[in-house]
Length: 102
Image (cartoon, rainbow, N blue to C red):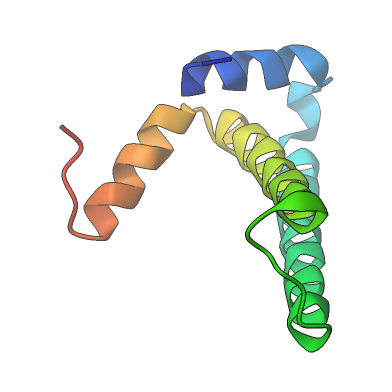
């Protein structure tokens, strides 16, 4: 199933509630959620390395994908709070790393 990145962001927005009067609180909550999701991915990767798990397939790969999807969810919400699209974020990411957005 293919999905354009901004369509994904719209779906995330539709599944989330937001009060404009709580912008700073919601923004901080999303940033903390990004950190928590990143920490969960890091913990899994460290445990996997310690246990010498094969990360290229099976359950380990599914767990990594799940944790990446959590990160994407909160990055999408944070971008929305800031009034930018995920497409804008991805273009900025490429430019910051010397890549082209074309």
